[in-house]
Image (cartoon, rainbow, N blue to C red; front, side, top):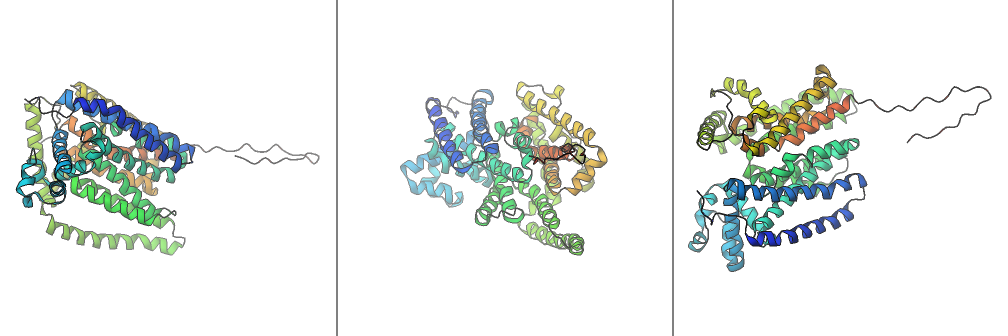
Length: 466
């Protein structure tokens, strides 16, 4: 049972809430008007931001008054310690942010409320980032939450710009997938790993596109986005980076290959690419294996088995909404056998009858819609045309490779529908974009009506088509 002191929302949060809302909306109102003259995407900017800020408010209320606990509490306590140190002793604040906890001075050590979360590098990274932006929220939970939520929104907006540039006529469905999907604007908010990682992912994709693929090169900015995105994903949720990397390599290769005009070179490009890629992959795996031995297949399976055991135990203990993929065989064969089950649970579950708690109902409704939309796309496009489109369109292939790999990773390790709702959000926009692009493949193009038949005495007036 948590004591009264274990809280994140105080009176000052509610007093300052309108002020924070007005400030952020005004900042981005002027930014939007200065940056975007395109009315098509301009109209999505502020509504998408508003939904994210609403999501941040709702998640704060949910954690405080429904759950009463969660990782966000501990992240905030650490961020608040950093904020207080900034006010009272900037040197201590610097230590908390930039120095490894093993090297802290006694003063820095004593300034921290809960030291355990500073020990784990992933949790410590979230705390430090929250602490850095905490002055923007005057040390309050809601203000700090808004700052990280804005980062998440800007990353998603950067991702939206990529797909809008690729398929501008699909601006509305792409906006629904990236900016307005309920899971995205609700769960990718607040002082959580998810808000930082989804923002980092969006910036990473934007950087890759505008440095390697787009003809409108933005090199310096793109390099910064790639480095920042990769750094944050590696240090908070490395499996996001592991999932996006192969998808990105395939995407870049096939997009560049399409621009090769010489048929011979285009045919030679594929075996050369796969040869170099295989050699590079072996080298990378060897290097990673020597540095990160825990990411070997055996280590991954053993760790996954431990996580599954703990999550199942805690779910049963707390009467949570858990799921089971069966007994895990810790081998490559067992991993392959579990693959479709894990992907299915991440994308299409919980089923309606599995939503035994009110908090899981929205996730069940979204999963049911995802399943229905997927079935509709396959029937509308056709199985063979779908497979052909996937392997002939680099963007669809990129989206599905990442979505499926990531869905497997989170479905295989979550074992709790409540946690899964948060963990799976990075893959959902990509999956929906792939479905939208597949539907677009069978869309009937608008054909201008033929001109009337002319006679020798008839004058034909040509009218330009819009």
